Length: 94
Image (cartoon, rainbow, N blue to C red; front, side, top):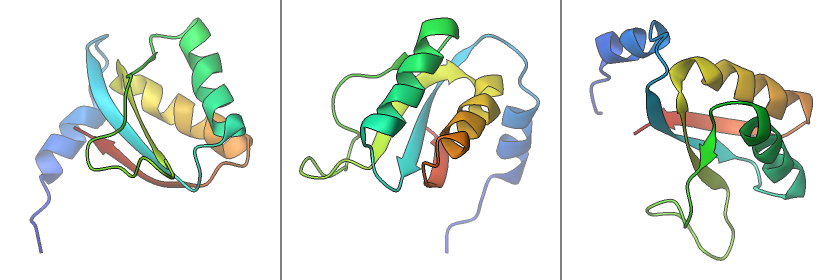
């Protein structure tokens, strides 16, 4: 089993800068409801949806989306997804 970089994860949680990071959201399904959440966030926050498929992701049935955003936007995006009843299975900083 791979050892987690706990210190790196804790530093990410304390990052209050506007530095954008690549974040992958793994969802139950990347349907219209989920996409609308990301589009809404993009319209009023520093969130950029990265074009193209997520590396290693299935083209036939996409469940993941990669965005570029400051670390402090991650909880806001998560709240919006949960509020829209979108299943979130993993959030990964890459």
